[in-house]
Each structure stands twice: as C-alpha cells, then as structure tokens.
Length: 399
Image (tube, rainbow, N blue to C red):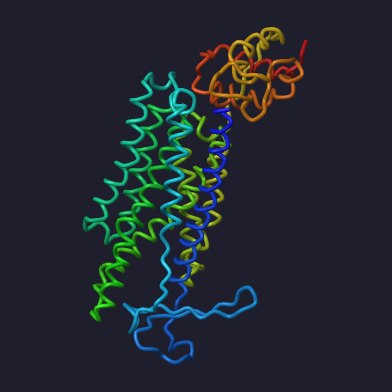
C-alpha cells in the first residue's frame, strides 16, 4: 500500500512539473518574442503615448490585442498588475521533489553505477546537490563580472562550463543520473534568476514608480539579460527532461559529449527564432539546416558498434540463464526487487515468449548502451552482454 501511494504521489508531482513547466516555458518564449517584435508607436501611425517605448498589435482567439511596453514606468501603476513568477517556482519545487524521490531515495538503482564509481549513497547525494547549487553560484558570479557585457563570449564560456560539468558528473554517476543533474543545475539557474534577480528587480521598478521616482534602468537591464539566458536554456533542459526515454543518449560511453552536442542543437534552433523575431531571419537562415546536420552527425556517431557473430551458434538456454540471473529480479510479474511492485515499463522476462518479444529492447538496453540492469546491481558482465548480442545477431530464436 505504501508503494502504491508513492507511485500516485510521483504521478501527481510529475504532472504538476509538466504543467508548470509548460506555463513557464510558454511565458519565456512569449515575452522574448514580444520584446523582439515591439515597434515604436510613431512608426506604425498610432498616437505616440508618453513613456511608451514600443507596442505590438496581435489577433488571437477572435479578438484584437494591443500590447505596450513603457521605457521605464507608466505615469501611474494600475491597481491590478500581473506577475510571472509562480510558474518558475513550482516547476523547480516539483522538479526537486521528483529528483529526491526517484534519484535520491532510489540512488542505488537510478543514480549510482558501481561500474562507473563505487560511491556510497550519501556521497552521491552530496555530489549531486553540490553540483546543482554550485552551478548557480558560478553562473551568478560570472554575471557580476564585466564578461556579462560581451554576450557571445559569456555564452561560449557558460557552454564550456556546462559541458565540463556533464563530463565530470558522468565520471561519478550513471549516465541517466549525470543527465538529470545537468538538467537540475540548469533548471536551478533558471529558477534562481527569477527569484534572485528578475522579481526583485521588478519590485524595485514598481516601488520607484509608486514613489514617483524614475526607476533605475539597471534593474530592467539585468532582468532582461537573465530572461534571455533562461530562454536559451529552455530547449536543452526540455531535451534532458525526455532523455530518459532514449538510452542511446545517456547510455553512450560519450553520453556527456552527446548531451553537449544536442544542447548546441537546441541553442541554435532557439537563436534562429530569436533572430527571426528581430526581423533578421535572413542573417540566421543557416542555423536551422546546420542544427539538423549536427543532429544527424550526432545520431550517426552514436550508433552502436557492430557485433561480431561467433562461428558457433549461441544457444537460447545460455541467454535465458543470463536473463533469469541478471534481469528477472525486476522484470517479473512479482519482482523480488523491493523497489518495484510491478515490472518496470510492464516488461516481463520470465518466459521464452516474453524474452523473444522483448529481444530488440534487451539489445538496446543491455548490449548497445549498458543501461540495464539499473545500476548494474546484478553485475551483468561484458561477456554476458556480448553473448546476448551475438544471439540476437544470429536471429534471436529459441533453438
């Protein structure tokens, strides 16, 4: 019963994480798009209003909308002022809860891989939390240096540092654990930008306007910079959120490099649309095809190595013995592993028919990527993986 409650709790929290994440990403995309599409009122033939720096007209859902942005502040603060912050807060909170439940409560399964680093659960958790919050400290420090005024160099350095973080985490965690911690690090930076910079800056702007003083433009500038950084983070973070469904990424021996390359694909796509929103689509036309080519190169480079087929036929009995010893503890109608009350993803490997049905998935998870068994708790050897791969290559029949 307790396990069932935990499963429902995970479902609820994951659902909240997705809902609030969609709202947050949607707001990020919209406001960056809005900022880049604003035009001075006088250029559109409309009456120039005092203090208005730009405006935009749109039609949606059967109605017309006029949006105006003031250079600093309006003459009077309206009684109802909408803030965009809780989407970020609840996305981060729900994400941290999920991380704790899935990767820290079950560290031996999802976070630790003894073949990568034989570390204790407490050590793994401390490293993970240190990486998550250390990432924000380093990023925030860099934002307070003169480098922030050179966005290209700043972005390049940040990309290199995140790549190094992915590399370092891949040397202590499972591939899946390393990926999720890079994502949590980036998500923490994004949420902290909202909590520590964007919202406090907006409070200063509102307070100054209420006092009848001219707001300090530095708050608006800092908020806009951090919002733009968040905008470029979104696609890489979204990839990491779905990556656990694709073991050919995190399970690759160079998974950290694949993560870096796929993040770059997302950044290029995001940059193209930002340029397009500024009316500079022609200058950035090459970014989308370049991103597609890079994606294809990564997919080709990550392809599993060809399996050498031995001269002698591998018997099904040998393969079934390995699977029974290494896999059935979890993949059974009634798993012996206490962390599961049902076979993961509904995959059972107890009978001949079940093994034959799942042989391609077995190859992907246990032969091509070594992501199964989880954490390699049952200590499947490379020789056993090669034997399973050879059997599948020979036709994968119950001979």
